[in-house]
Amino acid sequence: MDGVTVIDHPLVQHKLTIMRKKETSTAGFRRLLREISMLLCYEVTRDLELTMETIETPLTEMQAPVVEGKKLVFASILRAGNGLLEGMLELVPSARVSHIGVYRDHETLQPVEYYFKAPEDIAERLIIVVDPMLATGNSSIAAVDKLKERGAHNIRFLCLLAAPEGIKNFQGAHPDVKIYTAAIDSHLNEKGYIVPGLGDAGDRMYGTK
Ligand SMILES: O=P(O)(O)OC[C@H]1O[C@H](OP(=O)(O)OP(=O)(O)O)[C@H](O)[C@@H]1O
Ligand SMILES: O=c1cc[nH]c(=O)[nH]1
Ligand SMILES: [Mg+2]
Image (cartoon, rainbow, N blue to C red; front, side):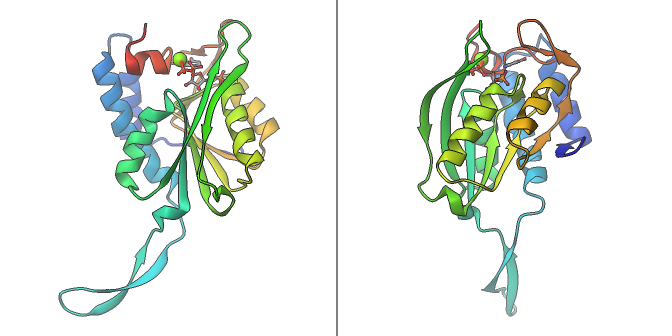
């Protein structure tokens, strides 16, 4: 699918299978989300620019490549985005962080925004928006709208599961934002849940149901 990268690494797929299982505990789900986020982070940052730095090894001086983590912003859509954020920050500890509070109204499936914080100079940075679920796409569209309003223009979206309906909706609103996901599932049910899916990501992470 154009503009969508499916991260099909065997370890990602294996961990995702365990996360989907209804008997996986809250603790297990959280641990797997942290682990899988590192593998997803590896793929979403695969083509990052490197700059050269002069360093000294025990033997000699050399020019060596480094990632400028400070140029990256990980933007977490609350709540469940924080599960992905945690592991990603372990790999890129110097990345800046944005928090975007959005939940979807269970009746209307429309996004309700309640918080936004981002570094001031997001226009100069690569923003990786993270949320495990792309269902209708309404929450991630609202989050990217907000980032663009503040000047961001180099944006990627990373999730764990995407529904075809959500991909279509998201790409209609933000055709410039590439999507990275571990799987594209079958469809949304009448309540807007991804099928087969993994249930409500926030509830499974935090044990709120
Ligand atoms: O693509 P959409 O149809 O908008 O659905 C996806 C959103 O739903 C979930 O959050 P939820 O609304 O449950 O928020 P919460 O984690 O704060 O409970 C999920 O983490 C996404 O943010
Ligand atoms: O299946 C879904 C859809 C939206 N949000 C979730 O957490 N799960
Ligand atoms: Mg939820």
